[in-house]
Image (tube, rainbow, N blue to C red; front, side, top):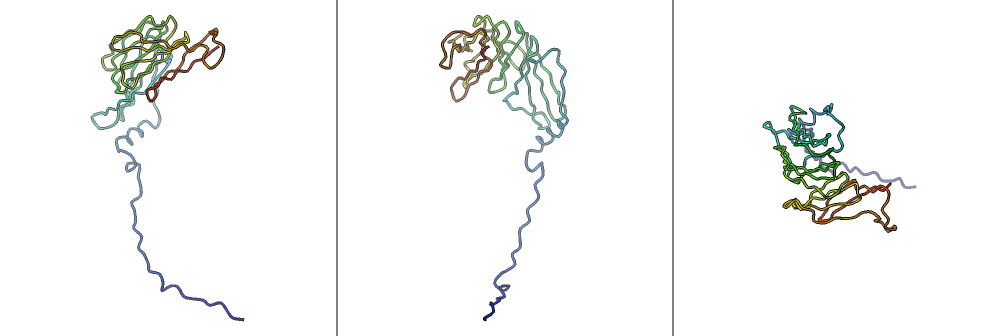
Amino acid sequence: ASKPAIHDMGSSYERVSLERWASLTKESEMDASVARYWSKLSKGHRQKLSAAATSCAWSPGESRALDGSPILRLACCVSLNVQIFGSSARDPAKSHKTLARTGDVCYGVSWRRDGRLVATGDAAGSVYVADATTGSILRAMKGGSSKAARATAWSRTSTTLLSGSDSGKALLWDLTSGKKITTFDLSGVGGEKKTTPKNTEVRAVAEANGQWLAASYDD
């Protein structure tokens, strides 16, 4: 019986030198200032408030401190005020701004796209627009509903604002004039018989690709 042939293939290959790449580090994966920011917040930060926060929202606008680290701003509805907290890498609670008082307990804070203005509703059904820097109220839109306005959302153009109410309605406001444009009645939506439930509350509103979205809760 013939034996299998064994061939020496060593001469068919050439040694190839592999290029060595520098190992990735945290600072090479992200901006150094951002890395410093998160390392400072690794243990978190607790802010004591004077009352319960009914809603909070992060600012979409980006700003930076003198050392280049990002400043993140958080707006919270606390009793009759919207409080804005600013944090940087050096100081997690660098600044604290309280906006002018609303007429009642405030709800549903939201930011304009550039981070300069905030909107909020209150328990009396009014809707407010305030300057996030000065704290001044620029618009106080009243008469839309006698029940609490618990949610707000800005349009893409920032010229209109949608608010959601415990009355089961979403109201669209013109921010130039401060007047109501139209009302969307969400009671009975979903193919059911149009009878108003005992409690119908619009708890969330949003804008996406030019379309308004609203979510209600029926009890």
